[in-house]
Length: 190
Image (cartoon, rainbow, N blue to C red; front, side, top):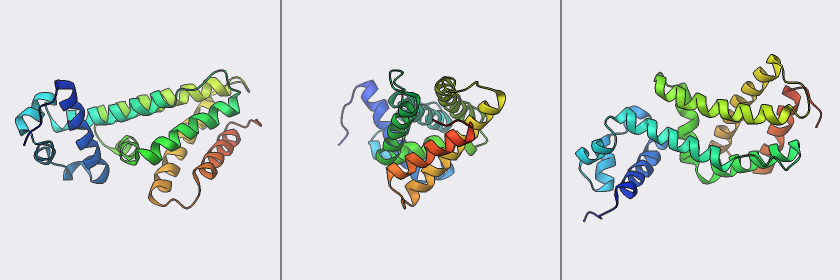
């Protein structure tokens, strides 16, 4: 029996179902028909909300990215090291409690689709800007610093994906490793 939902509730339901499916399987192995069946709606209704499968996937990636950015907003009242630790704690907790969403955002990076790469890149740029703002309180930000921060962000994403798949260290150990690695990469002693 189909449940009547408001437009926004239905849209969110479809996105949540899609997030779960895309996190577990490659893009090509997720079928719109399956999403519609799980939601108990017609395929046409799903296409009413999202004109193409790519649009549906892009909205899922964008939503997961935005949720993660909002949750990890830094507190400028904290010292730089504590801002970084707090941000990483939120990031790691999000990854631990929303592993599907984290995998979607970070595995979407490798795709050939320009829109998906742009969504992913916007998240990377926002995080890099936040970190560079904090690092600028400790040292002069140079092109080398910017490059180090972008490389560090890719390192952190890869480390978290590995940790989600094989959690052999604690969340705190992973956070501390990431903090030490950033300060080493930007050549700063906190």
